[in-house]
Length: 310
Image (cartoon, rainbow, N blue to C red; front, side):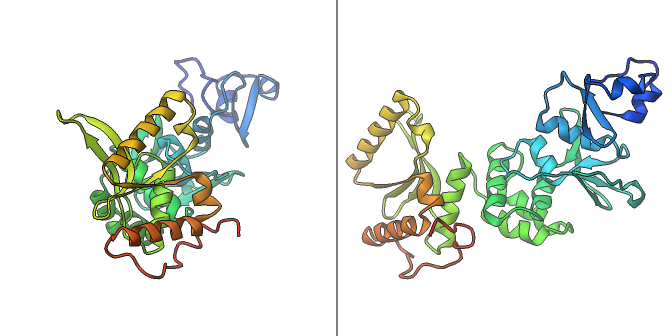
């Protein structure tokens, strides 16, 4: 219920019942000044319709102990997840369940909750486990890599949390957590690494950093095979949007030639459209350069996650 001692704030999602109780004319609520987000939940039309606002609105019909979970928590944490249409709210008492189109309600006995920009959401590791109910293995590893890069959790703590969790997605989350690594710069780097690893090729090191004589970082490479001095680089549009970036990439590739290392450049098409072609190329180069542990035959475990256009 709204606080009668303070003005009713229509710029935050609110329930129709609370607005009427605060003295707002029901006719105004049906007018063009307010936007309906969910049944019985509105907001002033001047407020931009952001994903975070929708998450906040999803919590309005529920008890104060409820919290945003699963994909909704991921959106508030600003994690890289695929487009998932529904909002998710978890309640701690079955009697607190509510039915709303566009909102999926979950019941849990307990939950690790934090406030992020005023919104009650699942804690970081718990969000990871919750997402295991809906995300694929590769998409979940992308989330884990991002959490680690942001300093929200370490790979070791994430594995431990998943192992101890009793949530429905705990086992799938544990499987994904074992692939999570430190220092990953982007989701596409994760996808490329997972393509390679799921095919049974040796796992490369992530983000090799080259330092100058004073210890300052001067170059960074996506994936690195130390024994064979082979680099695998994801080359996305961001690399050539500015001439300065493009020239920098050319310079560092020339430096690679000087050190007798070999670079393999993989584009988005090489991951999404032609994954098998990419894998065969990586396999061939690694075998030619003597990288240990390269199988003569690739595993098919990558195929469900990278179907390509064939």
